[in-house]
Structure formats: structure tokens, C-alpha cells
Image: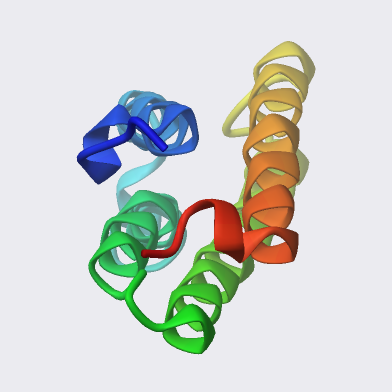
Length: 123
């Protein structure tokens, strides 16, 4: 395993990039959503990558590593749900929604692969 830092993980890089895209998308959300949908989707999207970072620190213990990756997966699913609300409330359009869901699908598959094969990543 040549990866020395969580920042080198493709899944981390993708999740971080997506969180930044969510941040940009939510800038156009209505003011009345500031303390609800905007905060929720920003928080969950950021948690996907932050849980990956935390899991990296716990890779000395397979169960702890998998547990934190599972948290990341949960945050990924939550973000997808908030994206659905964003589309349904017409804060983002169909194309924006599809692009984000497709990108999160990639992240989800990578997380599941890591969860199913922790020995590849654990020390």
C-alpha cells in the first residue's frame, strides 16, 4: 500500500470536491433555508470526507476503521437525500441533481469497497 495520507485517497479527494460543489450550489438557496436545508446538506457533505479522514487515523484497528467508514457511508446517503429535497423544492435543477447523485454514487461504491476489504488499508 503506497498511500501515506488520507488526502491521497481518491475517495477522499472526490468527497472533498463534492462538498465544495455543494457549498457553491447552496449559495443560491433561499434565505429561509439557511438554518435548515442549507446547513444540513453542507454538514452531511462535509462529513463524508471528514469521516474518511478519521477512519485513516483508526486503520490500526480494523473494526474502528470500518466503523468510521460506515459513518461516512451514512453521511453520503444523507447527502443524497438532501439533494433530493433540493431538487424537489426546485433549488437545484434536474441536471445538477443528476450530476451530483452520479458523483456520489462513485463515492458510495468506493466506500463500500473499502468497508468490504479493510485489510487492504489497515496497518
